[in-house]
Image (tube, rainbow, N blue to C red; front, side, top):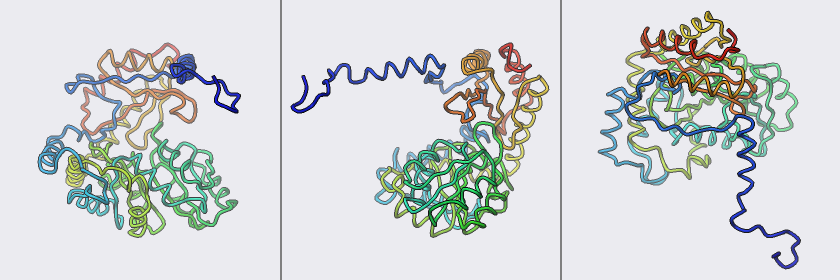
Length: 395
């Protein structure tokens, strides 16, 4: 039965979501079905899929700090940062993050996704232009979509294209957005060159250093610090606390006036419950471990290089790691899924990246090195990956 004056057929309630079945069938046909696989606390597989680059997620100093904070402050933050959610732990973490990374100030968010969303939207808007590398993380893409700014996505690591987009923009204000280390292949953005182009065209630079913190730069201070750009008045850094620091949460670092602006305007900060005190305490403890043990950063880079070299020697198409990420090309999405499953069955957990998660449309295994990998761990990983490879995996 139709509503008065309407020619549209009324869909019965039980059929409203029928379109989901068609969408699921299309994903299945394209080999893009994703599955949640719960792991146990006593995982026996060698983990080369997670982002615990420094092996600190289970470090007793880090986990112990989280447990103590939960007992002292409770299980949750109880409110948004501007109401009851800012504890002394949050303030201390922000101070030490800024000091460690060489910026004036920092602001902690509930996740790296929220940090990127808040930074991009609050620093742009209808009166701004955004120029991005087309391989940026999904959280940055969502920030661009929500910003209402003019957005131009240019070729990967092409500073000339960035310059052209800035020179031909229609808005006065501009923000260039990039990852530091790109999450799929682990390659490094040309940060110094991007900064120079930004300054030629009066643009700010926002760098997501999620995969750089704890891995690159002096003592793991990140790719922006390594490029000599930390603390610059026109550079903003976003981070996640869930990779090298083994905790949870995100942060934005930069000039003090930028951070103040985010407190006043970033919706993913203002209207979100604050990061749990336990996570803030864990990140703070991990940051102090990294500060006291700077060799961890060099160690994880060494393991990534070793994995890449040995798999390349075995005949696979392997990315050249500039951080902790190593990718191994697979023949296609179905083959990548099956290959990763066989690795897991043989005790090695690896990542599996497929379209649409990868912007270049190429399926691959994604390996993440860790500072705590042993020689026998590396041997085992290479043996399993090699022994379970599909026949047409490049060897």
